[in-house]
Length: 362
Image (cartoon, rainbow, N blue to C red; front, side, top):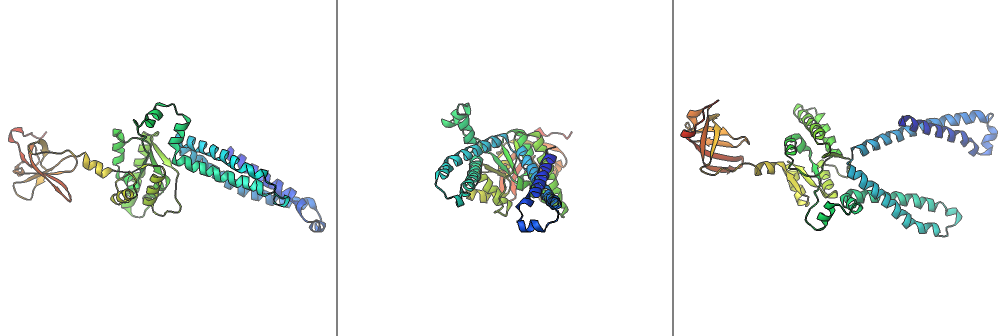
């Protein structure tokens, strides 16, 4: 309904402007016209066509703005609204002296022009400041909250938002990590990351297309499971070409933390003093450490390099080489750790069978 109202309003406005624009024509032109009513109808028709074109542009822009606002987090909408109002108030205070200046009549257009341009400039400045310091702005509005008091005394630190990387979405482990509840704060998926995911999903290469579609499916599931935690961030940077550079810039602008598993992006962000949460580092950190003498249940899956060796794998993929384990092929046995070795390909554990604790395969 609103779309029809916008388009019809512009059509009627354009037709009206076209109809009455005949009165602005020079008298010499009007003397040559045989029928003013016919000319008014023609100009009215041209005005209606221009109004239709302009109405379609405004309607499309309105729907795009409505979609962006509906996808924004509530705190961002509130902070931007407050920033807009504060910017307009400052504009009125700063521009008020201009209307008191004695400006000649032929330059009277300067006053309304300065008012419009100044209001637009200060309004955008207020919105940009709200994007950067939105949380602090909301705390100023509600200074009596318990969170504000704890932050003020230094007991509680505000949780920075997390900016999600494309590779982290495609990787898929973020879904399991979110299910554990260890990641705190708002998780932002930038609009340019969605565009990159869509480009990967539309790639001609079958493997890339499969990875892109998998990433979109994972993101959809995560957003449905955590609607209050996952938000699509509309920010974009037209002056920056690469997605990695945009991610670092966005994390800097909102004082956020980058969530990724990309080694190179991790290094670049660290060099620019941007906090990074690397999923690969997390996976490495939560691997259990086995000391010599520890026992574990292991299924022997294949022969080792030596004929008497057997090889099995832990749940995290760590390879376990069992001395004298070749005879237990396909069985699940209890082994005792004898040592560990860290290599460039990962960690390797050495063990021996515990005959008395052998477990028969079920």
